[in-house]
Length: 611
Ligand code: DCP
Ligand code: MG
Picture (spheres, rainbow, N blue to C red):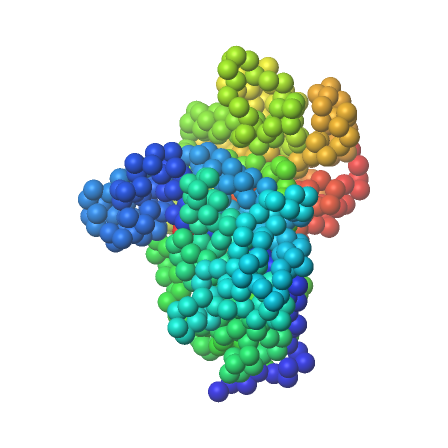
């Protein structure tokens, strides 16, 4: 059996936190069911393009599955009810409402969303408060305090038994009894009761069931939750162990993680997993190149990697390193395979860091069509900006705003002002002589300052979109595609980025005063004028005014392109949310633009040159 290196090299795990991970069951399908409860008893599938992106459990019971082709789903279950899920608005709104609901229970505001349907909560403070209140000689009759200010708010619970499932499983199938003198055990148990309460509250008050994991890190809470899906919760029991134990006698963390296929570990990206498989197998690892691109055909486990001879951060650096690999990748992966993840649950952001709307096309090759599409995308962008960036003067944001009975819109203010517009397109590669097309596409982007009129709330969305297309998008579009024809776009993305949070300023300042806000925007833009930022993929900049940066990876299609992606946490990178699409590269401290590492020094010089 392979032996691990000396234990002195093993990372220490800090188990000071209690973290709960929520994953809403069949999220998109549940959103439709919440709108129309009659759908609950029917097999329901959500379609995007030709694919079933998700389906409810009735459909799954009848053999349907996620990412199945629509035609196969109809064959398997002819009476399946199919709803269209390409417009993400309803999912986004439901996701935000659920997130807001959960965040209200947080004391430290550490509640972080991943995509639409996952949330982490760091509940360490609530657990630590409650552990002081339980009577260790009578754990069964405990009361959980949900508020520090009002001791009557909460619920009775039995702190001697963990709520829900546990790993390792109890042999007799009975609930796990807590050792009152093992601090971690009791803290996890208290966390499990909070999780149960929140899960029930989500179901009863919001109509959504969820799958939940409870542990001491984002990594472990997310993975342990998967064990009992759907409508389940699982707690990873101690001992967590700080050192690798080959027999896993004393370490439930490694015992749990070890059998996982290496690509199933969040934050180990597709390419990294391939390199690790290749290293362990001593030959290239096979993978599927079909519809669900990148699915492995091999099984290399965490244990195979962790216990490989001489395994250590330095070796992982060698295996995974290469141009553009960030510093510390070996250590980070080494920690992950040992179940160590000290990344913080981020505090809730009031506003997204960018808003980006895109659509993909089978064929988009005329200027007229492109103008029409830009108009549609602009309408969505403006609606999203209003939803996400405005709040009523009384402080309610647009999601929770009551329907106006009078027909008059209440006075609204901007929570944040985006400073930059970005247009990206993804041209289709020209067909090869044999008429096959390359799978590799890169995005091309151009940016410009946001025109002031976009913040005018007196104009109709239609009029704003029209102006935006003619004054901003078309000039950028012509820069990207100066030729009248000869291009064919597979994707167009419009975005506003570089948010300035106006609401965090003094209450009487820009957040409330639109005049001051424009002045502030003007000041910001004076410092930051990039009129001619052009982006072409994989081309080093020739002058500071001509910068190259590449978007992605964006969807499976793109994953093979970014060979030099400097983003370690590619793939399931949980530092991103759906509002800040993953962009490999570093972020400029001055203007917030994402620029690939190789272009960063030129980009900094550009700022130093001034206007
Ligand atoms: N989704 C998507 N495209 C994908 C994967 C997912 O549009 N390639 C959408 C549909 C899902 C939602 O994201 O409803 C969340 O993805 P999950 O993988 O968590 O799937 P579900 O929540 O639907 O199901 P589960 O109960 O397995 O969590
Ligand atoms: Mg889900």
